[in-house]
Image 1 (tube, rainbow, N blue to C red):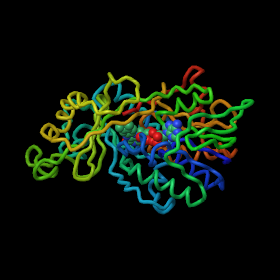
Image 2: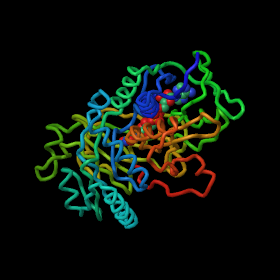
Image 3: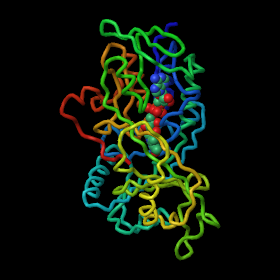
Image 4: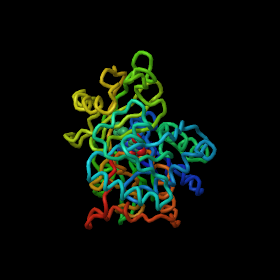
Length: 391
Ligand SMILES: Cc1cc2nc3c(=O)[nH]c(=O)nc-3n(C[C@H](O)[C@H](O)[C@H](O)COP(=O)(O)OP(=O)(O)OC[C@H]3O[C@@H](n4cnc5c(N)ncnc54)[C@H](O)[C@@H]3O)c2cc1C
């Protein structure tokens, strides 16, 4: 079998690249996913958060383009994505964070984003049930929100398939063939495919795909947990102090930046999580309930209703961390080998723009985007600015 392009990985990134290549008329493309369904990696385990509020200008620009597509996804791509723009509220309690966010908000405004600078009382008014104990300031962007990662991935994949892209599930890539500095094919559990172009969209496993072609990629997997809390008796709209609501009725995303504790409404439940600074890189995604013990006091302090909540469900997934928390988008190593990986825990929301940019680069088109911050060469040089807004 031969293909013009083989995409390795059927998460939001692989699906987005397939869709954007098809839009350029490149449809002799095979997307390979080793699991029996698409979105079984990080994409199927994430919190669905979508925000403009990043510290690195390139990430803000990725968000601007991506959110524009999310806002009209059903018309443009043909699938519903349950996008709710109820905003992201960042709570800041450390002086350094206040200064960093002040400067980032200035940069975001210059790019045309409306970001509000709030005091603690104004922040509390946006999120009923919230305790703003110790909060010095907050930022809020009303056009940030929550979308459905499965809808986005399946939407891109279905549109690509309609255009002629072949999607093979249950097929693992086991090797990449390179001759005279150029890709010549891939080996898979379903046989070899001759191709001059391979896209590494393997998320937390991207380093292993790079290694198959002798390309070191500093992308490491880091486990993160998500918990779902059931509503109290009477629901979240009651049960708060002084007869107020115990939690927001909207899907506003609230982030306590100093601890990285965050929450938002997920249907009748509350979804929440927090990074564990002691977590070591690895592929284990079994739930460590000890993490809940670390989160509990922070959660109870910020949203007192969570102190008595019962847990409905928990799961863990993998962030795909790079040293500077910026992704790799573009050519890596031999001729014909591209990567779109290393999004460091915020890739779902950037999949529309990242896929469009990579498709343009692969087609030899001007992506109209400064892609230097995404180049793999940066790891060998003195590094540029890192993304500070990892949650
Ligand atoms: C708990 C958690 C919360 C998150 N919250 C958010 C959020 O709120 N907002 C946000 O934007 N991002 C969030 N993220 C990050 C986001 O999920 C990822 O950045 C994004 O899903 C990466 O997509 P991907 O397609 O690169 O990787 P993946 O979805 O992991 O896809 C890679 C695919 O490659 C396949 N694969 C690997 N090796 C092979 C092989 N050899 N052959 C064939 N297939 C292979 C895997 O099976 C997998 O399906 C979160 C992540 C986690 C874990």
